[in-house]
Image (cartoon, rainbow, N blue to C red; front, side):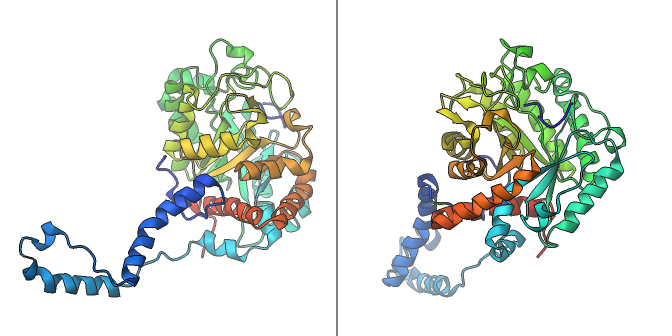
Length: 429
């Protein structure tokens, strides 16, 4: 969607495998399956049962000739110490955070051009990061804000810095803060090589300012029957095209180009805004996609971005009845857990589209905008209104205190945030 704040089984991310599983049925099943072989082996060892020999390795045609060797091997296996990986920086830090620091990591706060970061956002509420709003034309202003965010945060818990830099009309960094790049529609018409060139430029500019996350690329496939009538994407030239395969190729190129510059990519707006007519930033009507379901080919572009290693996925606030009726995707466990996590295999950080000023969620109480996300399996909210930071962090703290499972859910999402920061080189042991 157009920002309301100004004009304008995948192999990726194995660093996230250390994350604790929350108490969902799917996660519990995976956990039990992983433990089963070890449990069986432990049971046999406790009962003194000898391990079976491998006929090809021991020559089972003459068992008497192999007994001594087998016994020696059993003895070696019984006395071998199990090897464990040392804890990661993210795991060590997770154990050291207070309940409020854990809650704060799940909020990303928008800072408008020409304004300063409210002191309490970082010092009292421990926001997980900030993102730059509106149009920033001064490189000095950008760098000063990034530096202020670091100074205001705990030294060993640096803030994630993000910006919406897609190209074309949606470029929050302009002037001497960043070079101009074409719109996604233009790039899509030229092909993946053009996307690689443009997103290499974007990645270089962000990395030069100490910005670790691009809130791009748009992975939405525009419905050709809507075209420019699709206000949030097609009408603003934000989509790479109308063919899922071609869009997927462009998304892959964008993700890989950003990653090559040390910048994490954000796929948006899952499970796609290409079939809605109105912009969720400005309307709560006309934001229903009646077609997109679990098997939809329009999801292929997101799958391609996940395969390429995108670190974040931004959830749409539109409604998808084929997935879960009357529930915005950002609050839908079907969209997040069943489709994005289980079916597409995404293990990274799941964030919302704006929940601060967006009309689509204006009727949802502020506290519920983050607790409903967590209940659905998402990780962090994005708010264009910094004044909501305290309420959002308070809500997470209170929700976590209600139930041990809620507390574990918060820790799981905080762990994903910290794992992303470690992957980006922001944490040290």
